[in-house]
Image (cartoon, rainbow, N blue to C red; front, side):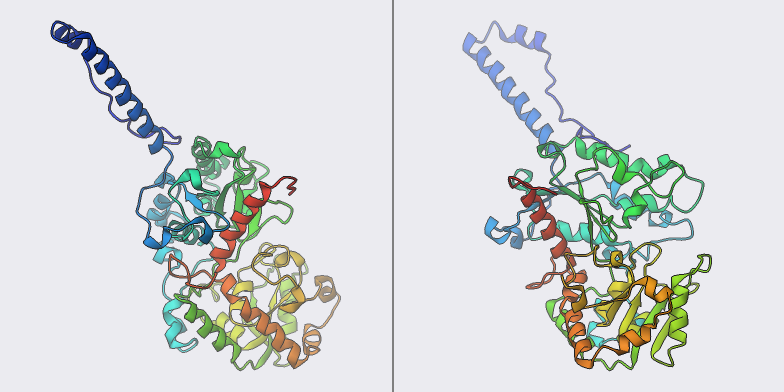
Length: 475
């Protein structure tokens, strides 16, 4: 079993001294001053041993940072991040056992390529050939892996824990709980085990005690509700409700809008640019696309749900006389490995974005990356989720139609046809402008001269930590 506290797996060896025999031998030959010197030397040796013992329990792996990381405070105005070196049990060991992450089959291909997944070679002919290397079949739950790899190479990462503004916990909470969600063979204790152990390890670190966790943050690669089990027989883990988790900032693909410590970050999509020029090339590609369809919808019905809202959207699409393109995702038609969804977004002015199994869905970001304008029906689908990443004026990049109006028979086609060509162009331009902020770059060092979703998220965390240090701060 791996150590769960700051006690190392092996202690530095102490000098083995037979004090009785050694002093008996030395006494006839050494003056008193040599005896004093020997005692002082022994004390120094023990002091150094204790110091090394303490250091080894806290610091991350002492891997050298690139020269670009040797930067001053002026280049990191929001502060620097220290990355904990958690035992492998909490992250890389989960990946090494990727065949156990899902009861229905191996997830090893899914989380390969540092979490980006397999190359999306089937998009050849759909996207510019020069950008094919930047597209992958990325899983929507891969953000923990992506953030960890980026954090280890972050330009404002520090190996000096004392100088850090924030402390990152690279725990793969989503992967840890995922294997226990789908069958009754596991207990609530199974679903909570990894998080319990992680919190014990972190709480034993001296830097936790500086602010009782206010300056710590973590990426949790599933929606917040997967970590908020209120009853033993309920869904998911109790990770967010466990003692000691309260003050940790959590980066999630869907947040609880009433919890200050939840921060909604973009779902990972398939586009992972390797340079800033990749982004500008893609932006120009989607800007100049010919869009033959007014709107589209990609999704599956929820047949067991009374008055299924997705069913209403599909019916409106099918009855829109060629104005709507439908991608019916029943079964596995829309699983990673198909170009149908991207093609529909690239060919449509608007894309319908109802809630998914929860309030959000990855399709929002697939749609916007393709330069299509999202149409929302719930405020909590985007507006109260991704404030750091999307424009502050919702009407500048999206359309909102209250779900109640659709249930009462309002025509989506008529609403969207009322937008003038110039209004559509302006909304699309705003969507395209924000593409860099909703993608995760391929290089672990990020994009030179351009901030992606990772940069926006981490700087946002650093700024809120600095804000709470100010007198009179309220959250």
